[in-house]
Image 1 (cartoon, rainbow, N blue to C red):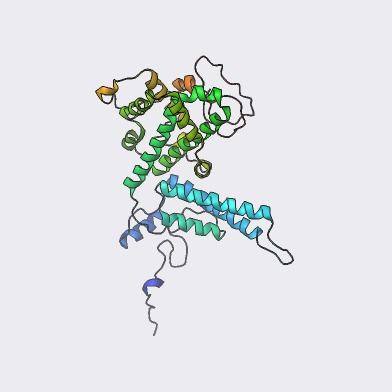
Image 2: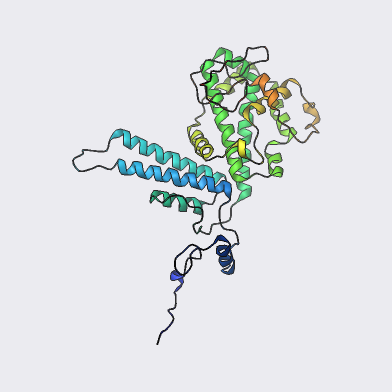
Length: 340
């Protein structure tokens, strides 16, 4: 007599597949998960999918380079260039994963898609995504707030000392600009992945009192003190941040496509420069009553004429006053998103 085979727990059918192994429609997958006590939505949103796809692609690339670096019969050792290329690829992927975690992408999904990439499996958004631990959004926002304050601290030094520094130490000026631009773009990219809301954006970078306080903190500093801070910021090691920015921007993440984008560096410098020279409130009277900050790209032309993070050999100063001639750019100059 035919008897129905009983499935033990570890043999239960994958809810993303039907009895013949074919993929179930997403709506049915969600209903099945709901019936099993899981969340009705357990799949990455569009922005998270871009990041996870990039993780898959980079893991696949690292895997291919690892295979090419394997010592073959008759060879004394792997080619040095292949070994270095593989190490760099692994490091790029690692930094992308760190950025994804900072943006609130579940670590379980990152590990899942990274493993698929290592196996040479192409990106697919319709896989059965693993259940994940709850995301501590408050902690991620606190970390992003700290990063934003760091960028603000550098930007206010740029506004207070950038003109003078660009004239006396061109090389330091270029390093300073690179670091400021990199860290500012990283904040914007992480905020995009995290899906910062309008209310969260106001707390992170939209409060007038925060910008007024930053400007007030440096208004009375001596030129020697500002020079020391300027050089310190120029010496920052932002290589890992640059890899994170590159990986996220290659995936289409950043200011241009974010719903509540972080302010661009040139606009931050412009805002702080305006507050330095035209205080909106007496520092002794507390924060300015104005609560919301509107960033204007036109003001940035007077303070930040050019921040070029890709061409460090450029001889043009980074920050200029309104009286300085604007730099000339050739058609071959990369577009850095900063208008002259």
